[in-house]
Structure formats: structure tokens, C-alpha cells
Amino acid sequence: MDAADRCEQIISLLTLSSCLPVSPSLLQPTPVILLKEGTDTSQGIPQLISNINACQVISEAVRTTLGPRGMDKLMVDSRGKATISNDGATILKLLDVVHPAAKTLVDIARSQDAEVGDGTTSVTLLAAEFLKQLKSYVEEGLHPQTIIRAFRTATNLAVGKIKEIAVSVKKDDKQEQRELLEKCAATALNSKLIAGQKEFFSKMVVDAVMSLEELMSLKMIGIKKVQGGALEESQLVSGVAFKKTFSYAGFEMQPKRYENPKIALLNVELELKAEKDNAEVRVKSVEACGGSIQTSVGAMTNDVLGQCELFEEVQVGGERYNFFKGCPKAKTCTIILRGGAEQFTEETERSLHDAIMIVRRAIKNDSVVAGGGAIEMELSKYLRDYSRTIPGKQQLLIGAYAKALEIIPRQLCDNAGFDATNILNKLRAKHAQGGMWYGVDINNEDIADNFVACVWEPSIVRINALTAASEAACLILSVDETIKNPRSTADGPPGGAGRGRGRGRPHAH
Image (cartoon, rainbow, N blue to C red; front, top):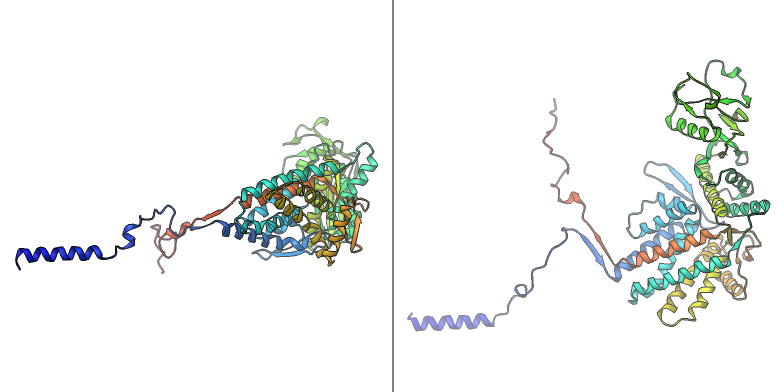
């Protein structure tokens, strides 16, 4: 082939190659890999909806525990320990929630429990209901920041309204204040396992809190559980009580009651005993009896000894208890709980904790509102009326907030087996006519003035529940992407991670 033929062949090949389609992969830029292989990322509206749905599942877990007719949950942990409770925070604490967004609801229930003590189920339900009402707006593409702005406005308005209508109780009249505190404690115990004995326990709780000093430190109220006996055999000891009997030779012959004894506080082990019990006894005895702790029995003078009006050893059930009563600096008390099953006494202790927290709050913030869904219905009506005065998207969103507040009375009705739609219609009508404190009447399947019916709770409980629920809803709405890192064991060698550190296996002899 001569040079001319070869040139012609090369030209025809070049022409042909220019007509061939170019591979798209050659034109596309190479992808930049930022995250480790296996990282799961999800974002946008589907991610928001997924988070909202997860929060609905959390609320379903505690929904049926709300109110006086609420049901209890039985949780069994990995070791087989059973816990029966209808306290929202306790249930959520025992559920091992792994969904990151749903954990937010667990956190607000815990914060409500730590801050106020009651209203843990309410705060979870409100947050989930806020999100449920907003779900359709998110699906339609409404920007989350618009929703958050409207919710912050609605929360500020609602809190302002609570402060405005809350009834302040004068502290001058001690008898009147005591009655108020007992009503608040009874309302807190209404939805608990011990609701049948709420009169008995509300008096005991108020006595316990009133015996504390100004700061009302919770640790100064001891709760001891003694199995056996009836609930009504529970008692409040104004002073220190602990299970530590003297077991020396001939102790049965010793008197079991001493009046105005001197008390030596020794930091010396006289007998082997669990250190935790000793530490608790020591702290309480020092704070109540006066005196100071001695590390030796050498130089005992009157000024280092404590004292009390009465010391006695008492048989409580199968246990023997030491009671120090009438301590000079006694700002401490001990509740001794009786009851059957261990789970029952534990739930009684949790119930009393809620009631004690409520009474403390009522003393510190002396304003109360009516419970039983009354305050929620009043706020719902107020916000609905307000939303009609403003234009645009805010109107719809504040209306959604108002509608979400109705979940509390609705759930109270559902849990009691009432016709929720009928009762809510009655309540809306009554609140529109100015019946500010009308809520659900659990006993008669109707509506009633819950302020007159003495269903009271401190206004701080509702304020805290609303702000926490609203904050949680806004937080979940502001998250539009979840990035889940792969487990670090994934990049270890296949097979047993952590093996092969140079030790070798022991030889089988």
C-alpha cells in the first residue's frame, strides 16, 4: 500500500471515530466522596415526615396513661425485672428508644419530671400532637422556619394568657394555703395507682413538705418501703427513721424508748453494714440532731453531742426501725410506705414523688389553674380567636396550635371510654360563652367547672409543659437531614474484631 492509500485510510478512520457517540462518563466530573462508605444520609421533606412519624409512635406508647382513668404499662427489662407504672417519664426512660428525633420527646419528659415532677405524659402528647397537626403543612412544602415563627408566637401568647388568668392563693391564711396544697396533691395523685387513697396520702405529702425548711430540699424527705400490710398503715415520721437495729448481746432486755437522749455521732464502724445506709443515716442525723461527727470516742463533751426529744425502736412489718423524733434542727421527715407487691410499693413511691414535687411548686409559685383539660380548652379558644385577627400563613399555623391543645381533654375522654367528640363540642360551646374553667368531668361523663370541683394544679406545670412541648416540636422541625455514621467495627478485619493482639491462643493440653 503506498503512502497516498495509507493517508486516505487514516482520514476515513478519524472521520468515523468523530461520528461515534462519546461515553457520558467521560464528560461527567468524578464524584467527590466526603463521608465514609456506608454512611446513611437522608434529607428533605421525607426526612421531616419520618421524624414526625417516629414521634407519633412515642406518643402512642404513653397516650393511654393520661388522667384518672389512664391505664398502666408493664415494662420488663433485659434482666427480667418488671416495672408497672403510668408515669410518662418512667415509661419513656425504660423504653430503649434509638430513633434520634424521637429521643427528643424522651428528653422533654425527663426535663418536665426533673423541673416540675408532674405532667410528663401531657408534655409528650402535646409535642407529638403539635407535629401531627403540622404534618400536612410540611408535606405541602411550607418552610419549617415559617412554622417555627408562628409556634413561638403562639407559645408566648398562651403562656401570657395562663399568667393572666391563673388564680393566686394568698399565703397569709395558713389554713387556706394548706387546703389548696392538699387539693393540688390530690389532683396529682388522681391519675396514679393509689388514687383510691388520695385523701390519706395528700395530707401526708403536705405534712412532709411543710415540715421542711425554706429551701425545701427533696433529699430531706426520706421514703422507706416495707413490704406487707395495707397502704393505710403507711406513716410519716417527723424526724429521722432508719432500719438499723442494735444487735448486741442482750439487746432484747434494753429499753426501746428514750426521752431526751444525747446522741453521739460516730464515724466509726461499730458493726459491719452497707456503707450506703450508713452514709445516709449519718447525713440525716447530723442535719437533724445537731452535734458533730466524731472519729473517736476519746473526748466526748456536751457540745459535740446531738439530741432529740424521743428515740424509740419500733416494729414495722417484719423490720425493726429506729425513730428519732422531735430533733431540735428537724427539717427532715421520713415516709414509711406499706404495701403488697414490690412493684406496687415502687409505683406508690413514684406517685408520692410527683405529688411532693407538685406541692413544692405550689408553695413556691402560689398560682393555680384548673386541670382536667380546662386550661387547654381556654387557651385553644383564646388562640383560635387571636388567629382570626391576623392574615396569611400565621393564621393557619396558630389555628393548628390551638387545635393541637385539644388533645389533652380528648385523650382524657378516650381513656375513660367517653364520647370525646360530644364532650369536646360541649366544652367549646361553654368556653365560647365564658365558662373559663370548664373541663372534663371524669365521674359523670360530662363537663364541669373544675375549679369548683377542686381539680387544681400549679400554673407552672402547664407553662412548663407548653414551652417544653413547643420547643421540642420546633427542634424536630428544624432538622432536615440525618447523617448516620457507619459502625466503626465495619472497617476492622473481617471475622472477630479485636482478636489477634499477638497473644495467640492457649494450647490445648
